[in-house]
Image 1 (cartoon, rainbow, N blue to C red):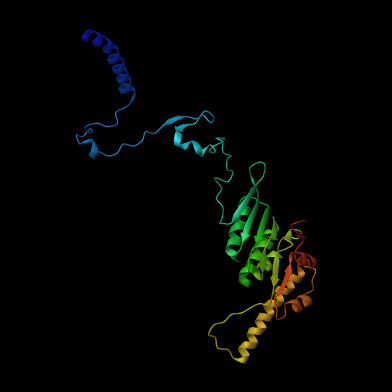
Image 2 (image 1 turned 90 degrees about the vertical axis):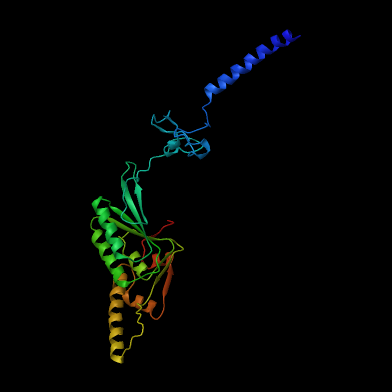
Length: 273
């Protein structure tokens, strides 16, 4: 009886032993009694996951597998499109280049919100250094300093000798923003039909300032001079008369839509057209 049981168990024992040997050979030991410095395994630092390396079958790049999605799009695993602007250093925020079919910068759009003449100078110098011949200024501004606006206008007029400076308004261009809008290159001033544009009498703010009748008269004289210069400039860049513009803004804000601006020739066309 014993002999029979022994004969039946020996093959089973051998089979189980072979399975255990294969498992030990193919599976690395995850836990050891002591680490290389002789400390208990529970006190040793946790082991880092191994870094998997390989070669990409598409790009043939050799590297870490974790870097795959630098070149590939997740899920579809197709190659990412190269960014032609990856190494382009823009002069400031809110500047958006447009690339032509040869990968060169064809146009630049500047989103103008704050009336800052130094931004205008920086952008124009950057475009000149790269021989960019078309600049689009998209205006979304409630206005600002008249003198800052005049500097922007002066820089624009100087640059228009070598490039087209297109102005656009989709939403809101008022006061100094309106002055910049009408200063674009002729034939390249556009507004949306629903854009809101506004021009008005110049405002002077003074806080805790003591004035005499003579000083008030002098302030009014200076403001009138500034207003006449601005209104004459706007009338020259439109089909309106300076006297009509004086009456339109007298003691009030002169609001008009993009379509109305086209009738006065403050813009040359509607964006929708």
